[in-house]
Image (cartoon, rainbow, N blue to C red; front, side, top):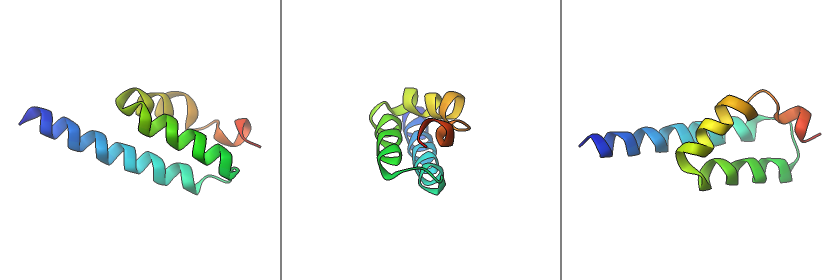
Length: 62
């Protein structure tokens, strides 16, 4: 039961992160790389996105 809730929460956060990534004004390659990091690394990828990548994507992928 708890595992299911954690899984669903992870899916929701992952989808939210991907939507935010695709709204950023960066190149398609940057969107693809960031999306792959978030989705392939699961919870670690979500944490990396929200801690390090969220405000810096436009600087990194000009």
